[in-house]
Length: 101
Image 1 (cartoon, rainbow, N blue to C red):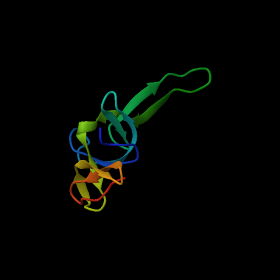
Image 2: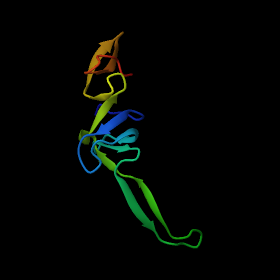
Image 3: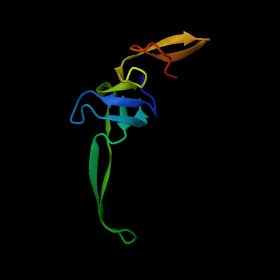
Image 4: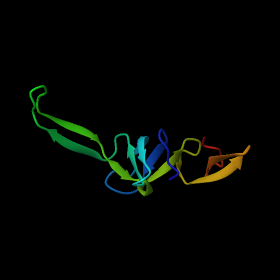
């Protein structure tokens, strides 16, 4: 999985197609990512002795294949490749050709 935490991504498929957000969390074992403001889910919490009943809204996980890295230099979604620079493997933007990290 090429997407990492704190990357800016664009959703390319699903109900939130076209939205841009930051990756909050990655789940590599399930090949999923949690993106800020995308795939909002609602959870109803029952009242307990210490807290009142409430409706919680939070981001759900979406498949990593449904997001694409957003290149700020090219101002567009792009694929990522990898290169070895100074003995270190780095991610490279396919559109601008610049090193991402």
